[in-house]
Image 1 (cartoon, helix red, strand yellow):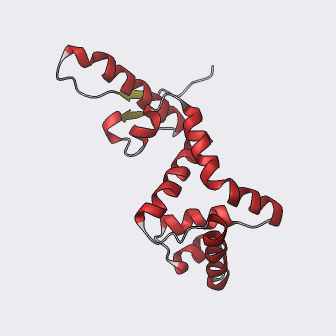
Image 2: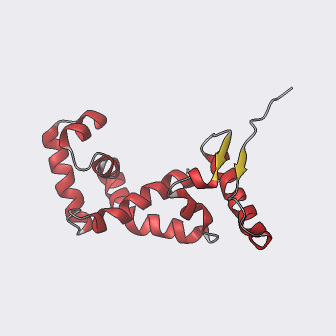
Length: 147
């Protein structure tokens, strides 16, 4: 006998019966999140940025955004057998700390510096401000959803 995992998603608290459909839709988003990220129980309110991403009905928008932002690095990585996409992920995760990036990617700090400069050139973006980094951070959240 095969036992399947049970995933439970909870919507938001109702203020009025008119919001029943909204809470139900949010519960569906939460259960999809729970299934995707192997959580037993998740409340929509605890999903963080994924509240927004899982609420988008047209998933092609998310896929297009991901590809628009990261395809340059993905194609470069495939052509040159490099790890620029992975380096960018850790650059964003560790707020640009070369030491932490090097540790996480098992790479020398000088290689990390070279890769970051290459990423900035390829993306035509300095990745200096929150506004410049944020879309790429979202792209990596989308990538987790697409896997």
